[in-house]
Amino acid sequence: MKAAVKRQNFDVTPEQDAEIAWLREALGASSAKDALLRAVRIAGVLAREVGNGRALLVRGADDVSERLVIPELERPGVPLWRYLVEREHPWQRQPAFKGRRLLASTVWRDMLVNRQTLEQAADEWGLPPDAVTEAVRWCEANRALLEMEAAEEARRLATARAPSPARAE
Picture 1: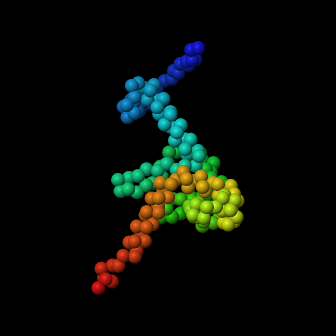
Picture 2: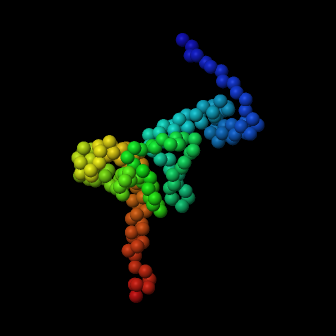
Picture 3: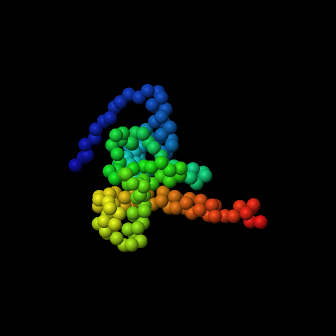
């Protein structure tokens, strides 16, 4: 049985045509159709990951990671998380529980170290089990970010403890 084929036909401006040509070259696609379909698949993967609460990170030449925000993938007014919120911090990007200064990673790591179930961790921290589940999902999806933040914290602590040349005398 032959698969149904639907013809797509739409007009593009010269600027849009140039964008499609650039995309074709950037993706190494054999045709504009192939480039557009690849871009759709890529956007689908990114949208699914953002929709699951994952953050997109980019790392610069200075080895510092930043959250990549693609406005077309963000859903304004729809929070990604029910129990977790972003918090103000100079360099950490991990969330905390709403109304508390408790980091998601603190609960997650405590669960792992103490081999606790979700229910045990929820009871210990005074959180709903769904909140702990959400923290676990966030932490497991953002392990690379947590590792980078832990390394940065260790570096900052080592720098703070190092004796200054004036004190060493």
